[in-house]
Length: 466
Image (cartoon, rainbow, N blue to C red):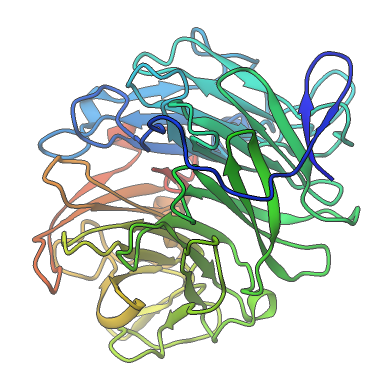
């Protein structure tokens, strides 16, 4: 069936687009720069903070990287933020950047899958806050056309210019009752639909936006675990009339997705983190798969996979490592091929003869014309030189990762979360490289509770954007 426009008193079916059209104007470029200073800004969300009320900390980038002194801390009790801060909302469970109002400043999209309404527990909601101040915004809920008690709308969010009108649009997914999705466009209308044909709950949803077919319309990919415990990836195509569901890829889903041009052909590719064999058929310890974009969109043909048994990759592939729990895409060495950072928060690390269980690590893989390669891969743990902190059991380094140019030098910088650090206080490590072909680390900054002012046991490092 077609997509559904929400609003008014009913739902109107739109025909599903069957062909891609060239965009008439200039689509909105992806942005994570809320203050328009030319550097990406970091979002560290803590959905488990304060009894799972949730909070979001925005740390502006600058010449020296993210500056904690300029941080903005947001909750649903902050001035101008829609909604009410309540236990269990999990505000910040998913976040995304995009210029929604077209003023050139990045705006913030925030999922709260635990949000209740008067009669429905965990209906969920999505908040959109406008940069640069984040003191005004609006919210979005799943329509009454769907079963929304326990829907957990906002479990995954993404932003992109799906209809190429020059403003970013918002995609959000719900995991209850077979899963559902909705997209809101700048003109005010929404389209929506179901993720599966069943009514069993899906889980572990994550979404990413990118132009997978090169037609100037942003597309969306959504990964989730279905009711049978199997990982799936479904993708949606942007068109002049909105966003339409295309189909399910043969590549199995996982726990994370990201989009970027790994192969350097001008189209976004999809990176899928597959941490568990039972869900994804992944190699023991997890793996990362790149699904290339093409003129017809995402195609499993030509997909490449790397894991810790691949040539050149540091470490050993062991069950429970959970490589691919988190993934991010960005060009670290400015060679024209986006690289991939993947978290493995279940990695055990032995130091001084003692195993640190679930200390965690992350791996940086290089992009090439043919996809990802293990050659030259770099391990990032707190036992590595220039990485702040020390490896400890339960740190879960790699719980979230991101790649973005936080200092304006044209190279993507690393940010890695460790949501178990200091007994659940959590931390974010921002790391720079020297930009050489080997991409060694050269410096790092530790952002913990003291630097960002997050509540006790907030699990800082659980959610990062861009």
